[in-house]
Length: 139
Image (cartoon, rainbow, N blue to C red):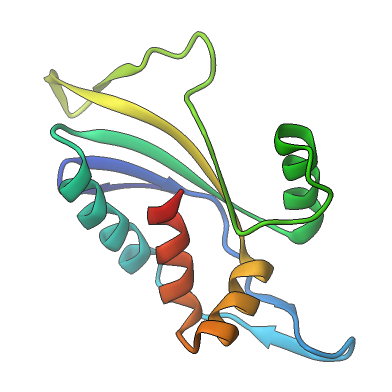
């Protein structure tokens, strides 16, 4: 989903509706407000970026994150968030189709592991949304 928040373009991958809970039989239902997540990330980008920016957030499971963490950091376990620069060959300044005169910076991609964020939210005594937002800003 692409979302235009303020002057930034934020795309979010599909968000899981549930994940495994504390026990093998337990499923934790997740209720997401995609617009709120994009709005909060847009607010953070407003504070950090001088001009418009583009970013993609990919929500991944523990297996995917463990693989990415091993491939790019040599660590054999999932982590909360990884950030990646724009793909080689991708123009770091992408023109916004709605405003041809405006150039925006391509910040790249974030991979966020929802299961790790859920565990951290419990430990930090905050909501899952708050932890995911914190990890996106950290990334």
